[in-house]
Length: 564
Image 1: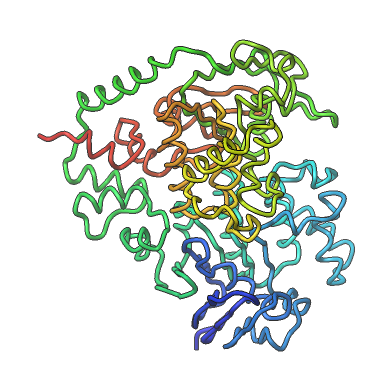
Image 2: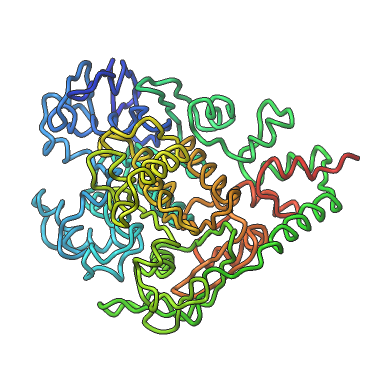
């Protein structure tokens, strides 16, 4: 008989006040020691399912539940959340909500202390958990001083310290750099092998899930399909139809007529070579030349950093002499590992932060002379978390706020709000409450509120975090249209496929210094250097690099194939 860790039978759930059920009759069995990934677009029901594993549903969230969930012999309706926590560890999507202690060490100790684990064992678990996530050096720091990615690692460490038999993680890698993402999945794999942990992970990034045993695909509260990872990732059309990003390698080979496409870089290279395909040097060189000619048209420096240094009041030296120039009309990505200084750098561009040493020029004038109010009319900044900048009761008032602050005529305010909401696809939602919208919706409201000021420069800090594939594409397509209409776009991101498909230039920051810069193609060609900065190109770009040319998308490779 199969040893089951989780049995879910005809699970239905509707949140209080909602007309549409979040889950519509889910039946699923998970074996002990299995690694199962839940995928699907936003609002598919993945987080609701995870919340049902440790009793948050039905005991904490308000709503109506039917069916049953049994985890390691415990029926969640009969056991309290505290009792379920003895066997189920949960890392929330909103990981910051899990952190409340005054330092990292105390945060990790909290769970074991509540389970009356002996003091010596707690000390051992603190060392073990911080070592797993690479935060040993931060044990005496306050969680509030950590970067977003470091906080995410701390949330994972605090759950690992409780030694759960079932570990459920709701998008555990959203805020992490590419190498740290791999690290989290390596950690979970090691834990599973060593301690027979059953692992349930909600994940949007398909590259990260190749080592999973199975994938369960959700859509609008229904379980559409569950199957072995390879079988699920080969079905490019199904993934796309469900709002999940397919891998670039199988997408290319599917387009080329493969019924069972390769998934990994190694498999892709072998299949390409076996077919005898070749990349045309002439076509590739023509494409690169056209790209460089296009960039050469950008002649006016807009933002310049000269030996920029920034030290925070707590003594953390975040920037250590940055020199860079962003040209008017460009679309650039700033990338680097967690805590490398990316957001600190971006906040200097609109005077949210001022240099400790060196200077930042906007249109040739130092930011210190212009001030945040004046620069705000030129440089708009959309924060990583839209909830950090949204506060009005209606979408219209939120988007109109900065315009009213500048005392523009009401007729012009109405015109600008309408223009901004149309640009982000929210026309007709003026009277909606922003706080009742999805993360994607709130992100769009935040972008619209900045667009309404008609800035020349739009800075987006991690614009795609927490969004599903379709929402990420929608937002970045909109931003690219703004760039094509003349806006200069700067975005900070960990999503390398977004960089590959949307950035024209890339700046890589490492330990507060400029580490690499160039066109996206030039930067992604340097895989070894990127690895030093805790970055790696998307699988598809790694695949093309192995073929001898740096191609950023399947479409580029098809365009460059030799006809002979």
